[in-house]
Length: 209
Picture 1 (cartoon, helix red, strand yellow):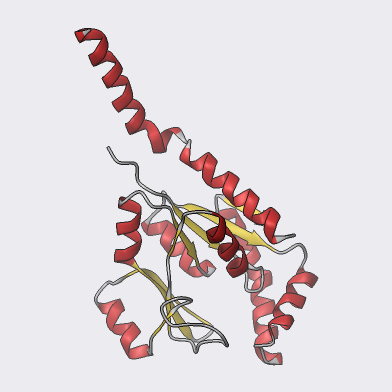
Picture 2 (picture 1 turned 90 degrees about the vertical axis):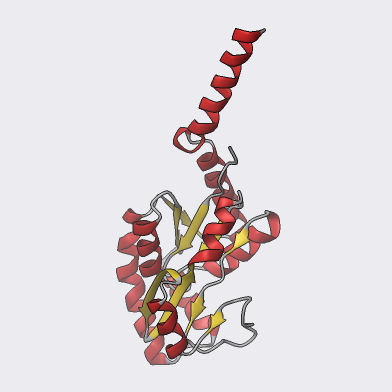
C-alpha cells in the first residue's frame, strides 16, 4: 500500500515569519506548497498563482458555493481559502504538503483533516513581533495597531496546535520543523498499515519456505 503524504499546517500571528520559514523549508526539502486563494490585493512582488490565487469577492463566493475549499475564512475584511482538490490529490500520491495559513483557517482544517500536523510559529518576543510588522512597510498606523492587538489574542490559540516553534532564527526554526516532520512519519498510527503488511509478508514466507 502506498504511504500517504503528510499535511503540515504552519501558522501563527501576523509578522512571526511564517512565509520566510516556509520558503526556506521548501528550498531544502521536496515538499509541495499549497497555494491559498484570497480576495486581498497583491503586495509588491507577489505573483498570482505563486504567492496566492488572487480572486475578487464574487469569484471567491462562487467557489465557496461549489465547496471548492478545504477551509476558508474572512480575516481583516478579506477572504482566504485553501483549494481542496490539489491538496488531497498530492497527499494521496505520497507527497508531503506544506500549508501556510492564518489561525482561523488552520483550526478549520483541523476540524476537517485532524490527521494533519499543526505547527504554531511564535515570535521571540512581542516587541520583536511589533518591529517585524513595522519593517514590512505595508501597514498604516491603524492597521498596525489592529494586527498587533490581534497577535496578543492569537497567541492564546497555541494550545490547539500539535507543536510550537519559536522563530529566533529562520535556520533554527526550519531545523525544528524538519525534526517534527521526521518524527511524525515514524508515528505508529501513521505506519501501522505498512507494519501489518510487512508482518503478514513475513508470516507468509515462513509458512511457504
